[in-house]
Image (cartoon, rainbow, N blue to C red):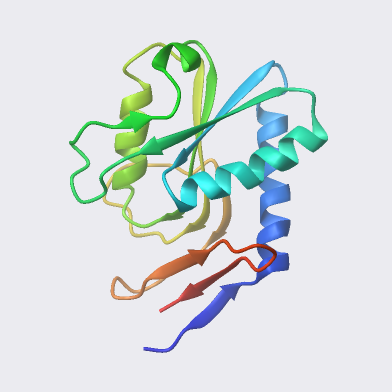
Length: 165
């Protein structure tokens, strides 16, 4: 299989800035926003969005790493901050690629176990192969792919890129 770059570093940087501004506008009335990134790439993506948000606003930006077993999403979900921290707060659940929607739907379910103000979702690449009714509120790109193709996002120091295999 060949590797096709679908987003280069500059394009990803532009998408991150645009998503950060959209989040800022959506949560204009909030003092704090929790960026809950799905472990590994989703969390890296959330950190990058958080860096931009901190540079454009005076909102408190709290990062939260969300660990979901993608092979067994019914397993217990673990977050890097206690539930009390995000109670009655606004949350953006962040992942790098939306494949089937399984990870996001179970992530949202976890945050709904306690009262929160608002939950939105953000992804860099939306593949349009949803099994669940998950709507992405902030996305870098929508990409129609075959079910056999895979999108990989690589976050390296000053060399981020996404490719299709």
